[in-house]
Length: 454
Image (cartoon, rainbow, N blue to C red; front, side, top):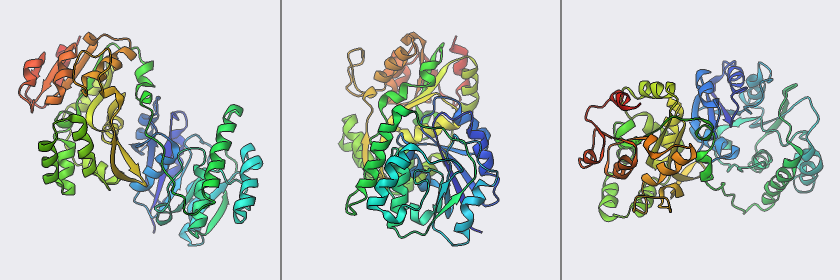
């Protein structure tokens, strides 16, 4: 029996995600269900975890990149993509989608529903398909985002990261000579786009179609997530009493992520060389990112999952959240890693460097959020420093620096620990950090910190 992986891109769908996951697991063919979270501000992540799905943070904000991330992570030979906002799927939705694939009658499944096609479909998409791709005009709902197909075909596709993703998939599958079948999944209720968004949708659908009229065109993924997204959602909505910030490497994690990755991928010598040759933190960060070139999301997350977590981290987080504190990670590692931990432990935010991905693989490039750079309110004189982040986060929450707790272990945590109202040196790998801290912990346990937080 071929294994099926279900991929559900999601953004703020706490009300419906559980039912979608339940119906995904209804099929005996389903091996795994992934929710690719797009920086949700509600309880989507916690609801998805409780419903039995594996939750992964998207590398870049946008449905298309979330779908592509799902392709790189999934292990099934057949992939099914479901929209997270449709609880009215039929109970056998997965079987309806995968049966033609299991019977080897099709390579890609496009769905239609028992309702009239949308306005952009009838006025724009179908006429353009009739001109440029007449073989595809038989599909009644070419913009449907509920699809399934063989992973070998999805592996060769670059996903648009806007409203053009669904029509782009259909055209790209046709260009691969995939056998495409349209399956009617009955009556479903999904959100109709508001009138004001139709112009944007029409433009992006047009762009996706016209881009594919020239076969030599290369399709590029979207730009990295807007940095202001890091400060939205829970971090703005919560009336926080305190802001508690954890470093990640050798603090939450028992070791350094990049050093563990270097051992796994065989670039330990090159990593040591970068550390010796580049004293500038920004240049060093960019040079280290080059060593990660070619790695997939799945490979990176496998490294994270292999690492030990400080034993009482989850218990500490639960205690802090019960007190009404906002909790997050500031790290000079990568947001893919910090967001993975954020989702696992239901933290409120993470701030880290963004690895660039192309077709599911790292390019060797990295984007450093501007939050890390010195600004006119900074008290630290370093151009690049974690301490520049905490002031902006505290301001967003209406807190003073006295209300910030910062926990770290290394040289790059010194300024952050000094500036915080309560600075904690945690099993310091940089001995001088202990002189800057208010509390020194030498045992790998976080709970003693709670005694000092009022």
